[in-house]
Image (tube, rainbow, N blue to C red; front, side):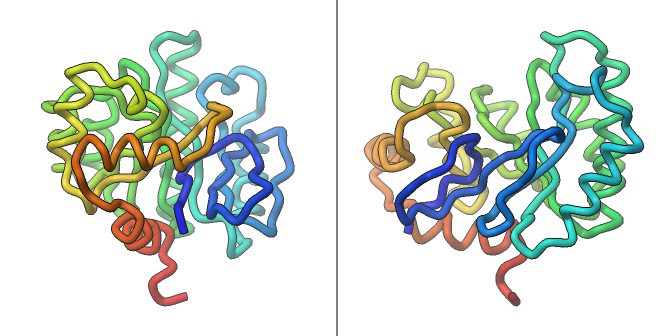
Length: 212
């Protein structure tokens, strides 16, 4: 079964998907989900209250990660984003949960923080960076999730995607309304590789389902 690693929509079919919930949403606990204080929301919510909400939902078996959290330099309040990101990473380490990261023009900061916070797995969602950045992230044991940009990839993204080890790849739809099948098809056409089994293994490791 195909896995949609990061989406904001609900599927009506049998796709295995991980729905990303904002802090002001109530997760559907019958499906895999993540929840976190998004960097776009850091000025709108009390951080301590947000952390309590996240910790409460993390007790559920279907909560596979804290996220999406992160750093976005195209938005305001970067100091608050940074504080919220570290607080949520610390919570993830306390709860032994991986994190799903929204990173925009902030890979240097993410890489620097990864040197200090290494206890759980991290994944960058919606990766569109270059090959060099991809290797820097992978070297820090960070997974990369690719989305609809694979449908019409730039040469830079093609080069990066082809260079990433298969055991560090996820595929996602995010806010795109299309189906994950289309992104799998684009990925497989680019590399001539069947990603379904490998991403299933990657997901089991990332979500700590191997011994579940």
